[in-house]
Structure formats: structure tokens, C-alpha cells
Image (cartoon, rainbow, N blue to C red; front, side):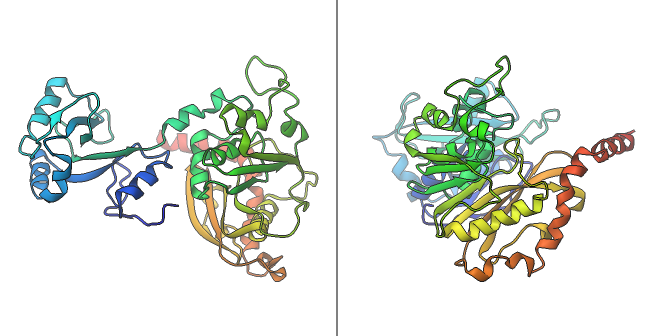
Amino acid sequence: LYGGQFSSEQEIHVNSPFWILSIPSEEMARGLMKRTVCAKSIFELWGHGRSAGELYESLKNYPTDKMLPYLQSDSTYKIHIHTFNKTLTQAQKIKKIDALEFLPFKGKVNLKTPEHIFWILEDYGMNPNDVPEEPIHLYFGRWIADGQRELIESYSVKKRHFIGNTSMDACLSFIMANHARVKPNDIVYDPFVGTGGLLISSAHFGAYVCGTDIDYNTIHGLGKASRKNQKWRGPDENIRANLRQYGLEKYYLDALVADFSRPIWRKGMLFDAIITDRNTENHFFISSSYHLSDIFFDLLKFGAEYLVMGGRLVYWLPIYRPEYTEEIIPRHPCLKLISNCEQMLSSHTSRRLITMEKVKEFKDQDENSYLLDGQYLPYRGHNSFREKYFSGVTKRIAKEEKDNQK
């Protein structure tokens, strides 16, 4: 989205909340943080080490010419300390700050409105029951920008005007919009729109949004309410009201009552992104023979036909983990698999966030191409996901796991 690539200088460590990246420019770093809801903050790294001594040595080796613009006598600054998995006293914090007096700071300390903020970051591991006396890794750097984690709270489903039983979590909704590379003036479509949770995150990023759903009552905000102590939905509980709540109504195109298994759109590349979750609401389908695999292959075919070139399809795929292999991910010759991320639901079930990008123009011969390339049959076995999930299998596996722990 911001015209560049970043790379990792280290593997992602699941036992650490810190990650060192190589980013071409500060402008790109700021752009990244304008979108991410997963990262808290980003810093220009001046030094790091596995002990205080290693940190200080690393700082002494950092190029002075890169430090000096932020240490001038006419500037103000402050140093902040963040410890992960440990709490320090104020006296301990001051001692650690004083130990950095060898750095060539010439400006004045300003704790309220400093021009430059520097952070000491200390990692004490992930186990709250076994906190080491000294940090296992230390970092020092100049703060550049914070991420968008406050969006998780401000767009919380708990505060939303119109919700369903399984409205999409706000954090996941923003992650999906980022996977889809949603940008201002895009047109974003959700074919299983439900209460419109996925439209809200896209509209926040300046895209025009629309959707369809087979459930007339959900589209029109009719019927029983999903909230506790409320029996029926109110007169203004609908998707438009949700976008109005966040000042995003101008981005709302419309929502239509439609069966996704039946075509309603004119031919042509209409959408910049398609973002959906088949399981977002309690959908029912006109034909009982419309299997889970049919839904996802129709979704890929629809994306191949109606996405603009370079447009993205982002959707959730339910998985029965004991039988999962990457071969069962539905494919289409017009779509390239970009990412495949897992969200664990239980020891034996999960769902995969699948992101695909349109790389080839859709032709008539691509209509049923999935039937020819062998990709359809492996996924047909996935039709039994619901039966496996709701049958005695889940109880049996849970009992076996419990017995094994004895």
C-alpha cells in the first residue's frame, strides 16, 4: 500500500513480543503503523543485546551521525522504559536511564511535550510464574509511531448498534481489510454480509462498501435481537445505522437480499476487494445440496470473474485439523494464493484466513476450470466438516485428551 517492501532481520519468535525489521524509510514505517492493529509501536533501533553490557556496547557502535539530529542542544526529549512481564520501581527506572549518560544528549529533558522520545525495552520472557532477575533481551531506540490498536476498542462489537450472534470481532475485521489492501475509493463487497461487520473496517480505510445476504430479516434488521435483555430488534437496527454510528455512512452503497448460489451481477470487473466470512451469521440456503465446498469454489469463481486485476479475495475457511493439508485449499487459475493463516478454535478445529490475488483475466474457459485441475475433489471431503464438528467426534477427542493427561 505504501510502495515498498520490508524484511525481517530475524525469525518471528513466538516467545517474544519484539520483532526486528528492516524498513526502507521512516515514511514507510509511519504508513505501516497507520494500518496495523497488531503492532503497538515502531522504533528506530539504536542498539540491543542480551545484557545491559551488550546493549551499551551496541549503542556505542551506532553511527553518531545518525544520532545527532535528535540530540541537538535546542531540542527536547524524554526516555521511557517499558518492561515486558515485569514491573520496575521508579528508582530502578531512573537508575537504568542514568546508565545511558554516555550517549551524547545535548537537549533538555521535557516529560510532557518532548520533541523526541526514546525507549528502553526490556524482555523478561513469557512465563509470569518464572520471571528472571535480569532481562533476556534489551532494546533502545527512537520512537517513531504507534499502531492502531485503539481501533479494537473504539469499534468493539459490544458497543455496536446492530449486531448478530456471531458478528465479526473488530480486530479480525481490520486484519482482513489489511490483507485485502483496502484503500480510499476502493469498492469492497461482502457476499455474506450479515450485520455488516466486515464492511465497517473497509469503510474506515476510505472504501465504498456493499454486500448481499440471503437472510431478509438480517438485511432489514427485523426479527429477534441478539442482545441480552432485548427481545426484538429496534426500528433503526441495520447495516446503515452501524456505519452512521462511526461517521462512515457516506461510504455505504447498499445491501441486497440475494442467494449467492444464483448470479445477479452484470459481467465485468466490479470490485477492488471481496472480504467475507461464510459463517458470520446463521445462513440458510435454498438448496440443501449446496455443499460447503460448492460455496467456496463459487466464491473463488466469483472473485476470478468480478475482481479487478490485482484485486484481492479474503475469506475464512473452516478446517478439521487432523485431516488438514494445504492441498485442500481451493484454487483457481485466475487467483494466486498470497497467504494462509491459522486461527485455532480447538485442538481439532481451526479456520484459515485465506488471501488470494487476481493475476489473470477471467475467460469463459475458466468457468469450470476447478473441475479439471484436480483441486475440487480433495476439498469435497471437507463437506463433512460440520458433521464432524457437531457429532460425537468432538466429545470423544476431548475425552481422549483428558484420559491421556491422567
